[in-house]
Amino acid sequence: MRLFRLTLSTIFLRKAWVICALCVLVIPFVLPLISSASEKPVLIQPARIQAAWSTLWIITMLWGYFTAAKQGEINATSGTGEYFLTTGLGATRQLWEIWLAVFIFILPMAVATAAITQFAASPADPAERAMWWTLNTQYLVLFLLVTGPLLCLAVALASRFGSVAGYVVTLGLTAYGLYGVGYLDNLLKLEENPILQSIWLFSPHYHFADLTQRLYFKSGALPSAAFWKMVGYFLGILALNTGISRVTFRTKLSS
Amino acid sequence: MTFKLDYIIFRFINSVSSAPPAPRPSLHLDSGLKIGYGSPIAALESPIQLGGGTHFILARNGRGKTTLLRTIARTLRPVAGSLKTEGALQYLPEDLRFDQEMTAGMILRSLVPKKRLKEALELAERIELNLKRPYGRLSTGNRRKINLIMAEFSTRPDTGNILLLDEPFSGLDAFARQAFEEIWRSSSDNVLRLVSCHPDYDSMTLSSALLIDRSTIRHLTGGDQTWSELKNLLH
Image: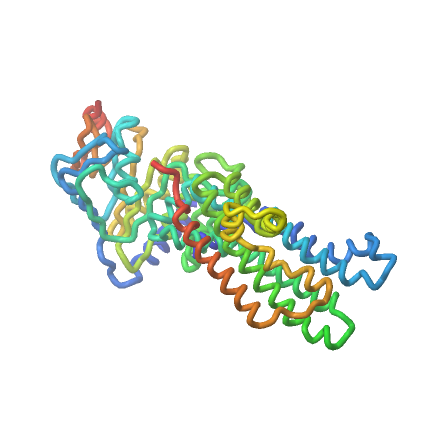
């Protein structure tokens, strides 16, 4: 795990993660107090939920993908990828170790967000509170299932096409999956179009993993069957992303 | 000062020799091996067999020193022919670099196996590598020291090792160079080092040298052969 340790130390030393961690821990408490929610105390908890999960998504998309892309590019251009390759650390293992080093920073932030929602924004009603744990855990699982493979894709794309490409593609893909697919759906409701329909069908529906509104409106946990169907769907995307990442990833500049 | 360096080298030898005798490393280059990027830039006329110890690759610029090392490291396919290696391989590219903000100490702590970290850090201190200075603010020579320490202390005592070193001495001061040469001498049994370099003094002894000249790779040996003789063979 030498490459993992090296990548972990590099990210740790840059300290940008400290700002991200602070944002995740502070924004959910500060933002509701300076918003209109401060005039209606009943709105503080929903505002906290919104602030907590939005911050996590934004940090993952802005810092997480950027860090993953940067590490992927550095590994291929600095000679470290080639060095490790000659020591027997194959491309798959290198991709895994770099991904793991980045993911280790995202994981505690996601857990902290779920914990904030659980302990600092849980509903007063006992029946609603009973479902809170389940819904929070479901959200955490789906969030990690969506962002994990995208971090891997950012590493891989950046190793071949540069960090800008790695970052922009994964950022665009996430934004499209979260919001763009919804707009496409609205378009299709207005007018049928087989091409757009096919694009919609094969698009990554990341918006399924965004359960913020469900928490916000206290709609309760996802039914078990629906949740496992989503897990299966995102595992399918994970497999596809992992495959593309492995094919794209390279350990050194081409000769 | 010399005593402490001797002590470090003694510990290095001890860490290598305390294990049961390790299989010896070997490198076999078949005759007909052609190296290059698509089209051949050099080829072997007769097979070359190398064992433990230090072997130098000598050639003028652009004749294929790095290409040969990368072919042996298998990060580049031979244009034709084959080769065989026995031992744990490490190829240290000339331009290997780390994050600008990482300190030398952090790099070594991340990369050197725990068992040998103490020795590695002691050697770093003896050869005046500032462990607290960020990589981006180190001189070329000090960056080379990090790479070399990392490679030397990552060798495995339980097996033969092959170290492919691309221009490891450029920018390195004489004291540090001497320290590494001592380590090379002491561990020549289970480490095969293939070193590409441009020797900087005529009397330097090169008892085993691979010469790349006129697109041909030859192996010349002789206990007393020096750079002043060998350089006349390069065109």
